[in-house]
Length: 166
Image 1 (cartoon, rainbow, N blue to C red):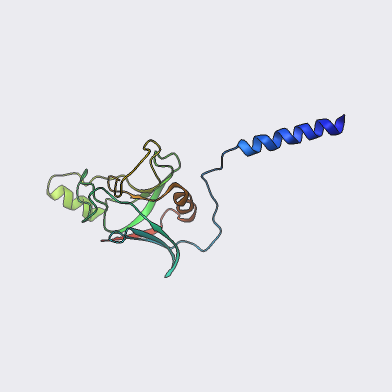
Image 2: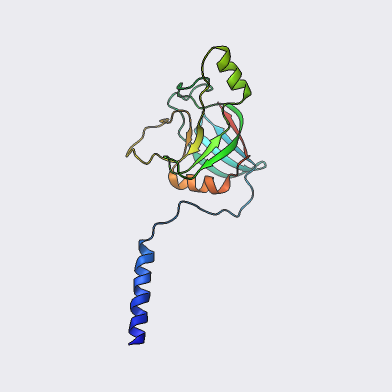
């Protein structure tokens, strides 16, 4: 009887573990990501360890991808030198890493023409509420697939430089 009870308990635990959802938080034990490079024209993002590419991702950008982001609501993705400045594990876009836009030059330019430079630019996953998307659908962010974002989130640390090219 005791053996039968153990079998039932083990079978129940196995069934429960099969129902558990896989965590979106991954671990990474490889080489440090020392820079993120985004090539807007090719819609590619690279995670680098010094000069060596570790990962390459296809990306979607802002809905008006040509040109540098200048003002809030222009739909453009920034261009230039920034850094990863924050993390959002509860993003409406699965997971997200903040980009330090606007920098001092971005703020000064927008202020000179009496506009806001905008902000809240992220590398993020897919939206949780939309069943479909078209290319370059973000409001100025850089988007990858959710599974890819899980890797990016695990690999890239706060303070990592990011260069965004036209």
